[in-house]
Amino acid sequence: MKYIEIFVKTALSKSGLENTDYSLNPYRGCEHQCVYCYAPYVTHTPLEIWRTTVFIKKNIPTVLDKELRRKKGFITIGSVTDAYQPAERKYELTRKSLEVLLKYRARISILTKSNLILRDIDIIEKFEEAHVGVTLTTLSDEKRRLMEPNSSSIEERLDVLENFRGKAITYAFIGPIIPSITMPYLESMLKILRNIGVDYIIFDRFRWKKNMVLPENLEKEIRNTNYWEIKRKIYRGVKSLEIPIYFDW
Image (spheres, rainbow, N blue to C red):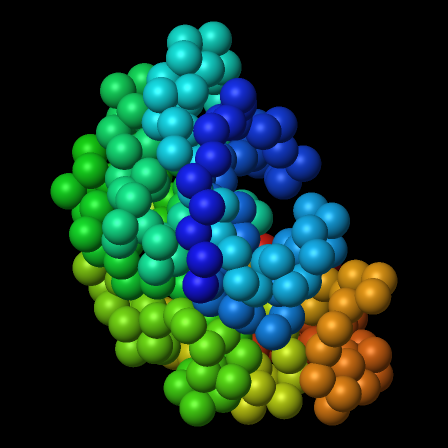
């Protein structure tokens, strides 16, 4: 993986996400190499660059400090690329940005596939409102390695939720739902999340983008999936959970 350090003029981007005012992405490109990632298509980045290069926004904490003097609102961290991908171990831009956000008493949400976020629990627990979520597509680590090869294991992600319980608002993001790797584990997944005590769960469908490059069998499966029927199945499965759930479709 190639790292290229760059300097940016802006840190916060106006967000189109529901209940989010701004997004913050300390890196461009992602080392997790998830086969279903649609970020290169929405950012118009050639796939070969996205998968081989991470751009390091070296001055983003400084720029963020200046912007927060006039920009207020809810901020989602890592909306395009994971803020806790391996590059963060070296550059610590997410940690430095969190220190700035805490200074301005910002309200934040972080979604990750990495247990590196546990390093920053000392900062995150000080926020008045901080949502910490992990992505789950399956409970099978074998399938996780195929779909999300450079990300933390399922056990490590569940450990993140355990450790942040009572220190942040915790949630699980189950998505994208891929029927063959998600649905066989859904019942067990929901029971585990209930026992951990997550505050809420978000479900999301597969986000198909034009010219997306996928393994042939996965492409065929997604094209033949009825996500409205899956939504009905999920509703039936969560009736007794007593956990708030939300759908992104």
